[in-house]
Amino acid sequence: MKVLAPMLKAEEESSPGKLEPWLVQARVWKGWIDQGLQFYSELGPESPEILTEAMRYSLLAPGKRLRPLLTLAACEMCGGRAEQAMPAACAIEMIHAYSLVHDDLPGMDNDDFRRGRPTCHIQYNHATAILVGDSLQSLAFQILAEAANPDVPRVSIDGQRIDPLSVEVALKCLAELARAAGPMGMAGGQQDDLLADRLPRSEASLERIHRRKTGALLATSLKMGGIVAGVPDRELENLWELGQNIGLAFQITDDLLDVTGDAQQVGKQTQKDSQQGKLTYPGLFGVDESQRKAQALIRRAYDSLERYGCRATVLQGLARFILERQQ
Image (tube, rainbow, N blue to C red; front, side, top):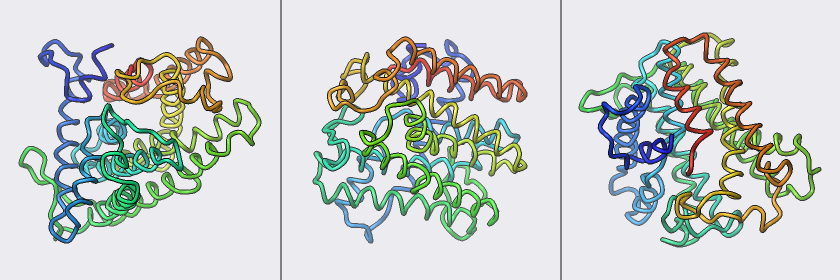
């Protein structure tokens, strides 16, 4: 599985015939996502040139595109057509990109490198980085709001223009994404993380932080795919729970990479959490027990995917990737 992360960053050199079928599909979808992000971030002369450049620097940086891949995979698994979830997939990647830009600022995590490159505020400046985050957030909601408007220029996938969403689907996706990004989701989790030294050093405190800081956006990735596919509310709840398990496993793995990972391979500074005394899974449970917890969460995710049969192949592969990733 060492091949997974490089492949998802479009750096893997093996021919498609040597890859697992889910990995071939993930590569295709990643290409779609990159096309969509290119399209949506071409803003024209009304946006200041330096702002557009800095937004694209942050948004189009080589990355796993995990959240939008989960959205497309969930949509197809639930009986929809993956390409119809492209606006939702690109919108959630913009929210993720904005959160990274702001997380890297001196007032937050104060990081100089992200994805192996200077962070936005280092490459440009502090004020521009704030505006980049603000702009990516608003652009994400604009994409979803306009996804139901047939008169708005639409993203094309390999030259084929996708159909507009229904107003009901676009509104549901808007509400879910706003909730996941806001004070009851990602932003609230980040606030608790900043104040973690005031919380009890317990597993409950860790889950409180990470089920919102990381889990909310990952769970919403799956849920929006289900919304586009038109599944009933009970199935949306199952997708949310699946996403929470995957999200928590992702965070545990992220904590482990800070302890055991190589900075060059990870793409950012490691050992920061322990140096700052942050509340993390390895700090609380140790490396071995943290690995077991991540494995148990992925096993739980696998169990919930069994009922989808072969339609869950891509999601099962992405779950494995989350557990075994090196970046």
